[in-house]
Amino acid sequence: MKSSYLRAGAVLACTLALSACGGGSDGELAIGGNFTGVTKTGLVLTLNGGSDYAVTPTTSGAGTYYFPNLVETDSQYNVEVKTTPDNVEKCDVVGARGRAVFATNRVDVVCTFKTHALGGSIGNLTGSGLVLVNGSDRVAVAAGATSFAMAKVPQDGVYGVAILTQPAGQTCTIANGTGKMGAAGINNLAVTCTP
Image 1 (cartoon, rainbow, N blue to C red):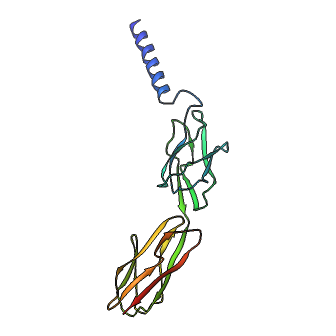
Image 2: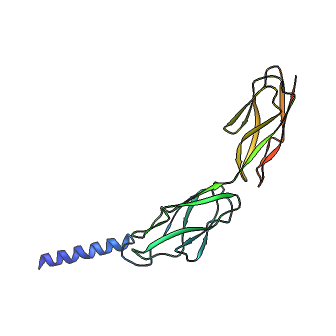
Image 3: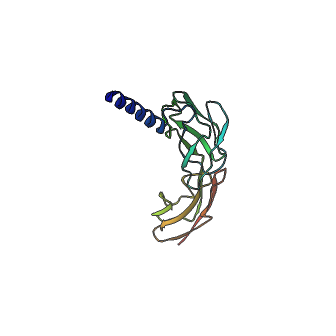
């Protein structure tokens, strides 16, 4: 008799534990994950081809999301991208498909920004040693060059091109060196050097 009570108690404890973990009740499992590269509105996801879910952007571009509609235990889930923000080249869903055993927070969305060219003209450069920088991007410019190109900049990203090293025997200044990248490349930076 005593062992029957113990077995019944063990079964009840296991049932309660499964229910607390989201393993016992159908229609109560959340699907979501992390996102990166989302600084503007426009990312819309779908879960199992159902209702649309618009991801709220962040200033850093990173955050978490969860679909408001829950799925049943042991059901299949499939997360797809319906639309992307206009400053994004593409968005990939990592771990898009699976079987819902527990609440899932590992369906990550990785968006890649569009990038555009950044550069300009150089006037009267005769000396060697000119080095331009934009954040971590460094460009060494050869003597006699009349133009330069920095690494591409993400759309809507800020840039600030500066002179890190002056050329031998000259002093150079830069105009239009700072700004925000639009939907097209920027080529109006102007470096002017004097003897």
